[in-house]
Length: 207
Ligand SMILES: [Mg+2]
Ligand SMILES: [Zn+2]
Image 1 (spheres, helix red, strand yellow):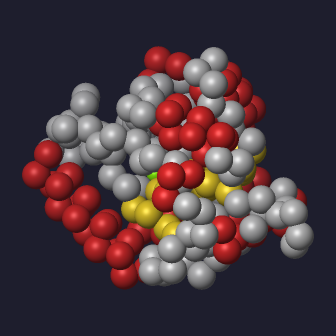
Image 2 (image 1 turned 60 degrees about the horizontal axis):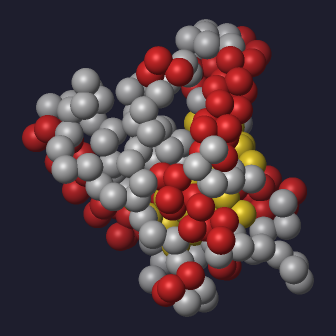
C-alpha cells in the first residue's frame, strides 16, 4: 500500500446536493452550501475525493442509468468550475425486489454494505487508515465502519419531506448513530490540513 492516498468519501444526496428525493435533473439540483469549498480543501490536502452513492432510482425505473451518469458529469463540471475536483463516482443502482429486473440484485455495494468503498480503495490505491467518510444517514456510517478512520453523519438541508420538528429528531438520531459507530482514532493528518465541513443550513424544509 505504499504511496496509497487518503480519501474523502462523500455520500451524494444530502451532502453534495440537497436531497429532494431521487434527484436526477438540473431543475431539481441544489448544492449543499459549502460543498465546493470542502472538496477543494480536500484536493489541496492531497486527498482523493470519491462519491459513493446509492441510486435505487435506477432500479425503481425512475430514471435510466445513462441519465444518472450524465447527471454526475454535470455535478463534476459544476464543482470543477469552482476549483473542486471529484476524482471518482461509485454508484449502486441495485435494489432487491425492484421494478427493473436487471437491477433486482441483492448486491454487496448498496450501503450500508461496504462494496463501493472497498472497490474504490482497491481500484484507486487508497489508504483507508487515513481516509474519512461523510454521509447523512447511519447507513453511510455503517458502510464506512471499520474501514476508514472517521465516519461522520452530517445532516444538512436534507429534510425534503419532513416538517422541521421531525427533521430535527431524525438529525439527532443520525448523529447518535454516528457517534456510536465512528471510531475515535483521529486522522493522522494535522488539523490544519483536514478539510472543513460544509456549513449547516440554519433551517429545514427548503421546498
Ligand atoms: Mg444521503
Ligand atoms: Zn449495488
